[in-house]
Structure formats: C-alpha cells, structure tokens
Length: 193
Image 1 (spheres, rainbow, N blue to C red):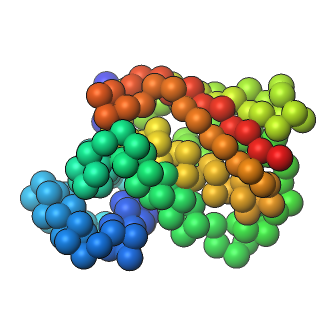
Image 2 (spheres, rainbow, N blue to C red):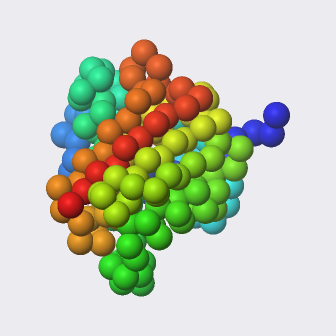
C-alpha cells in the first residue's frame, strides 16, 4: 500500500490553529509537548505545496483530542479546527467563488478538493438528489486509520456553506467516536435552509 499523504499547508494551518487563541495557553503547550519528536522537528521546515505523511496531522489531531478527551468535547474542538482551516483556505477569491456556488455544485466539488489535498486517504462520495430539499448526503470511504479527520470535515464543509449564505446548517455523522477515531467509512447528512 502506498503511504497516505497530505499537503503541507494543512499541517501549517493545524499548527496555526493550535497556537491560536482557541485554546488556553496551558492547553496549547500540552498539545505541542505531546507531539512526537519526528513531527515536532519536521514542522518548522514544512512547505505548503509539498506532500507529507498524514501521520504528522494525526499526531497533532490526537494532541487536540487529549485536551477534553470526551466524545462531545473532542467533537467540538475538531469541528472548530475544521472551521479554522476552511476560513484560512478561503481567501478573497475563493470566498467570492463560494458565494456564487449552489450547495449542489459545492458538494460535487468536495471529492475533487479532497483528492487535491490528500493521497491514499480514501474518497468522498456525494448524493445530491435531495439538495433542493436542503439535504446532501456524503460519505468518506477508504480513510480507515485516518484518526479524527472525519470530524474536521464537518467544520470545513459547514464553514463553506456559511460563506455561501446558507443558514441553520446542521451536519451530522455516523462512524466516528473516540472509541473508533479512524473508521473506514463515515456517513454525513448536511442540512440547511
């Protein structure tokens, strides 16, 4: 099997989130001190467009998960992280483009966006047949072992929907929990008005 990889900019944004005001100073320090020496030593030299093993990201996500260490608490922190990454990724041009997209067109692009930034970490499947009713179903398959990424996707996707001007966004998932942080399949329902 080929090593699962992701783009360096994701790692840089993760460090930025950890160092942001989202966490209290002690929590920030705890997360950073929990990183393996390999990850801690590699982070200063990360280049945004280069490919890196996804293990680097999982090490940081595990550190985030240790702070609250409950399903609800970790879920909240990981959604906040996904929102942060989405906000950072949507520069002025992307914000303008998102405002012109419909939820259906955006959802259809999610598999491409995932593949642009992730290699050998599964794929997103999208069902937009009920989009006109405010429901899109998504599935992340083949990402087994990619701990906690399923919840970060909720923050990322929900944030993009807000930029599109959608209201009352609710995104739920089945598959992730602290007991199963890296399932092979996660099913999502995205609803809005």
